[in-house]
Amino acid sequence: MRRTINTTSFPDQKPGTSGLRKKTRVFLQPHYLQNFIQAVLNVAAIGDRPLVIGGDGRYYNREAIQIILKMAAANGVRHVIAGQAGLLSTPAVSHLIRMRRAGGGFVLSASHNPGGLEADFGIKFNVENGGPAPAGFTDQVYAESRRIAEYHILEAEDVDLETPGTRRLGDMRIEIVDPVAAYADLMERLFDFERIRGLFAGGNFSFRFDAMHAVTGPYAHEIFERRLGAAPGAVMNGVPLPDFGGEHPDPNLVHAWRLRELMLSNPAGPDFGAASDGDGDRNMILGRDFFITPSDSLAVLAANAHLIPAYPDGIVGIARSMPTSCAADRVAASLGIPCFETPTGWKFFGNLLDAGLISLCGEESFGAGSDHVREKDGIWAVLFWLNLIAATGRSPAEIVGAHWRRFGRNYYTRHDYEAIETQVAGTLMARLREMTGGLGGRRFDNYICASGDDFSYTDPVDGSRSEQQGIRILFSDGSRIVYRLSGTGTEGATLRVYLERYEPAAGDLELTSAAALAELSRLAGELANIPELTGRTAPDVIT
Ligand code: G1P
Ligand code: ZN
Image (cartoon, rainbow, N blue to C red; front, side):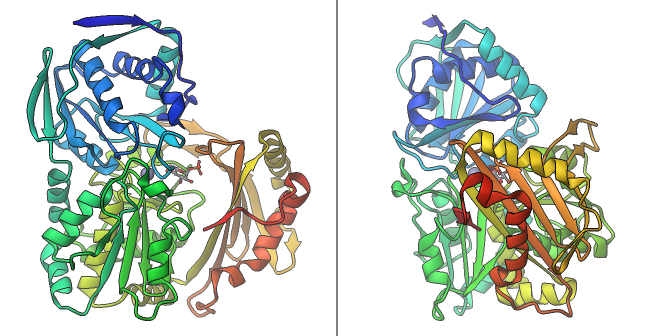
């Protein structure tokens, strides 16, 4: 039976964001999730095309899927493709939407945020190109979520999500699919699995992957262990848990601490280590006692893409988010291809990928991807590195060292000041904005300022404008300080300060990043008056 339920509770989605990310209890409020789903279904023209549904397995994942299925059926959706046990990584959803020519897909995840009743839940909608819904779409969803006063839902038993096969719900067909198979097949087409198998079979290469109790566990077991022959046990924390074992499924040196302990300061550690986040779109790459910054990783992938079967003729262009280091720009220049600098957030890459202007893209926040899907992709990045290691016979540290000796090194770090009062953060940014115009030519100790601005972007494909995307202070030697406020934090404001210093190939390439960036770090604090305005003398998180 189809029921129409009146609702007055509206999701307070931030306009311009491609989904909702809130405390789980917020989602448990009556009609809250339902309102968002109804708004999306009203705006998205799914028609006869399939709708893809899956999530990262966190608390409330299965319940939310049951609600979406019943609402989809009551709203005339004909065909749903859902991941078995409710699981699908974000890149796997993107791939399924594209492969099955779906009208869109729901991803249930709060990405790298913790999960559980007292933690976070989230939902986002990806459109037919497989990427996050663009601003025009999400603005409509937001308006719709405030306008509607009712939603439609089928009164029915829960659907069995646990076994693959086809079910019916009202007039709707539900296909429960293995969440891994199609994605793993895609990876086999992009990378040289034969060669990677040889690397593992050789017996003197060891590898660990930390799935952080999140969605990539099943993907990693199938791809690394079963299809590529990595030693059993190579995948750590490979069973998705509703609360991710009580930890943050965020692949950085703080939260992926088990992998860090294994890989860093451990001469007997594995040769190569990697981790991914809650929904499988982020990656962290480590060599033995060697951390590779995401910015360097993007540059290395770009410089070596010709070694990968997916790019026999090389790549057509690269894009990086503005705060990501300029290491990729140097590779693009040497290849004679464009490097686009976009605002933070994956959606800006989608247009460039769809228009065929770029092949690779990435962000400093542990995200990289390519034209194979329209999301960043954690497992893909790990396979790219495995393929490079297998093809060159070099260790991760050797590959990066050779890269620096050719292109120079962009020392890089990010400092986060979390839960600052929103008003204070606003003042800090406004003062910086005022100051930027007058900085050109000024000298600060060893640094001469070349220019300063508040980054804005005109999309080369659709001409849309994005203003105030972060304060950039550029120095004459290629160094930079960037300040921006996080768009994803859930408490107060988070100030991110990105520091970058360029050291030419003939310079000192072996400093620690803390030492290399000490002077810029001090300068960044002084220019923005961080201690005076925020009362903070040190960042909360350094990555
Ligand atoms: C952060 C990252 C950004 C990434 C986003 C979603 O956003 O900095 O690169 O695209 O998460 O994963 P922020 O909190 O900085 O707005
Ligand atoms: Zn994520």
